[in-house]
Length: 279
Length: 279
Image 1 (cartoon, each protein chain N blue to C red):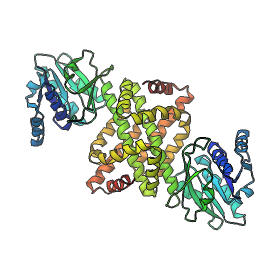
Image 2 (tube, rainbow over the protein chains, first blue to last red):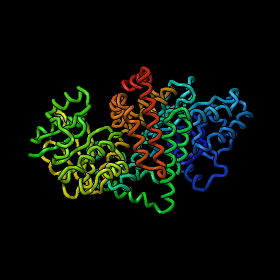
Image 3 (tube, each protein chain N blue to C red):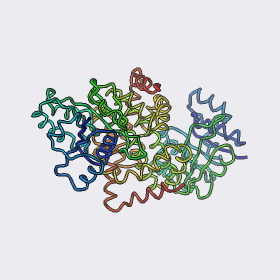
Image 4 (cartoon, chains in turn purple, brown):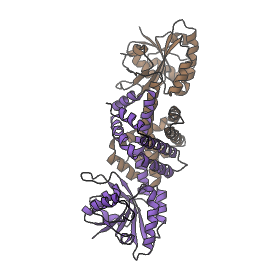
């Protein structure tokens, strides 16, 4: 029977865990020091609490944590893998740049671990939603095959370690960038008395984009604080030599402003909502 | 009979001129020092060459020139308007920020001229295309009414001088910003071996956006050099206090890179075309 370990039982980790359990796998997770809410979420998903030693004995170990924790999770597991008899398979599934992915891989001794690059696109799986995709690169040996056929959309990329991370950066940059552009220009239009005409012009000449912004901007407010770090990671991914890195430093600043506004009562969000609700 | 003067007989000025001629107006234009190509274009559109004195005697004078020339055109006309018996009506229709629009207005003595803020959204009018819109703000007296009913879509905004310019900045920022995001991230994906999966993911989960990028990115190459200045104008419009101004400084750098690539043979454009053509 397939044993899959997931480090991280947040909304995404637990959502994927539940799918794998429903798909017939035993799913372990490490809950040491986690909150009662996380423990409950993991339990509800059918995941089993396990020690680090039990985790590294699984057929594959997935890391699904906030980007800032990716390297320390790798360090923790690498230390345990070194003392384990068999070579482990570890997949980092986090929203990190290819460079950070390289840092993650470097934490492991290749004798002790095979490291795969994963990235998740879409929302966490839930009943009625099957859009979650797990892209995998650097997996010539198809180690990720054990995840297939269990209700997840697993897509191997014919690219090196880092390609799946790059995909996540690029896709996120476009999608979250579009929401950022809409937010920035709608706020500017509100300040300038051009808001109604901007909304009308978008509805008229770019209805798809108008719909995407009307749904996506309010969805973004509670996530804005998290997107700050993601935008900075994309800027670092592009690198100082690419003029586009400045675009994402600007996006990080914009999302910081939205996050701060939210903490201060959400005046800007209310202005945007007023405009977006208008037909 | 309505007499309309258009300063600038480029593709947009001449396209609008032709519509107004077809709509029954006499359309004057100033061709001093212009190229034979511009003279031919103006003539083909049915516009009549006129002196500056004849221009300011028209019922309304439109300025439709590259953004960098907007202020000097205003200066030229203001000098002639000062010596003219009647108060003139002048509308700046250029892609300039509200602040630059204020500079344009300041060139005129209010005793000699009523100044309106116009902005054009869409391509130049042509047979079969009626999408060109001329937005007008600061026009409480409906001076722009003389343009209505002549095959152009004239839209008065209930806002001050500057609101129409702001609309153009905001709309252009979203539209040209989306193209810039797609360009930047596709180039990064190509560098990282994630290009095929990015294209596939966009086609899959954002088909409208995918279509917009597939058409809009190749369309952009020849205009990229012009968009550099437009992005810088949007950054200035947002102002240093707005973190989003950095987004558009980055966009300006990106479009400069694309323009330079084009001058150097178009290697990046060829890479993008290869990816965009893929289904």
